[in-house]
Amino acid sequence: MSKKGSITTADYLNFDETTSKALKIIKSGKNSNLGFLVLVGINMGIRIGDILTLQYEDFHGDNVVITEKKTKKKRTIRVNENVREGFNLLKLKTKNETGPIFRTTRGAIHSTQYVNRWLKIHFGSKKINVSSHSLRKTFGRRVWINNNENEKALIYLSELFNHSSLAITKRYLGIRQEELDDIYMSL
Picture 1 (cartoon, rainbow, N blue to C red):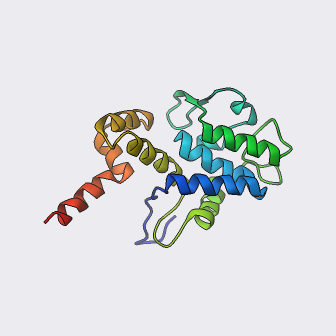
Picture 2 (tube, rainbow, N blue to C red):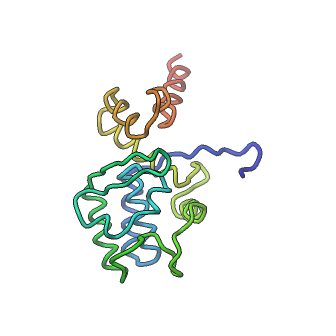
Picture 3 (cartoon, helix red, strand yellow):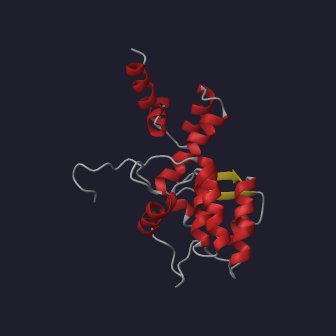
């Protein structure tokens, strides 16, 4: 439970900086699987609960197929070059080739709470509130920016995120607040 008066909304991260840092973490060999978790989160846009269930075998093809825990919907996600590179680096750093990817040194699956604490340490700052949800938001912001910040991108993201309206997607990505801030700055 969060402290009274504290900010609980996760912020998005800078995609390029986060990608670079995640690759460095994988290459370091210390918490390589968590570096890969970051890459998966910002490149696939899936929830942390779905990320934590991923297996090494899921990445042997061109697509990852998941059944989302929250919605029970089956989803096929194309593995892009960032994820492929991260996975190949991860395989060099671990002895595992089968089973769950995001295991602790004792073999248990990382908890969402542990991932959130780790993300705050490695990707957080006093200016932004980072959690595992930041990864999904970073994915959304990257898609929106790469598609010239247009309505079409919001429609696709709304569908990917299973949002009931574009207004929810805009608010989720922080676009609505930016638009409101612009009103004040235009006076």
